[in-house]
Length: 123
Image (cartoon, rainbow, N blue to C red; front, side, top):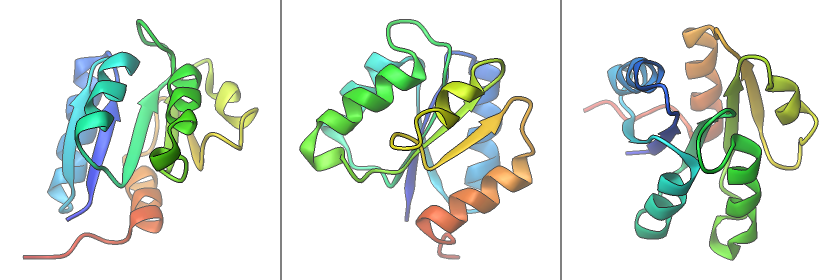
């Protein structure tokens, strides 16, 4: 089963996204900021990271750069979701495989996740 890490300091958004991804069969973990995401990635393997831009400790671009510095994580796909700062992701195509503006269409986001990591296996 593919595991996705959702990184967002807005718990409501993280929960909504988590529930939507779990409903279609993905395993989801969450982190409330970039540093917690890095700590998580040192302990567990995930197939995709979906991160917000505006967060305490590390913003989405800083998080992506730190992930890319780790040899074993250089090919990990990263998606950025943001309100006013989505352009930061589009300006860094070397960091992000996709950028979604908030509010985002959940069906489009799920379709992109399936494209990147494959459709979840049904039980």
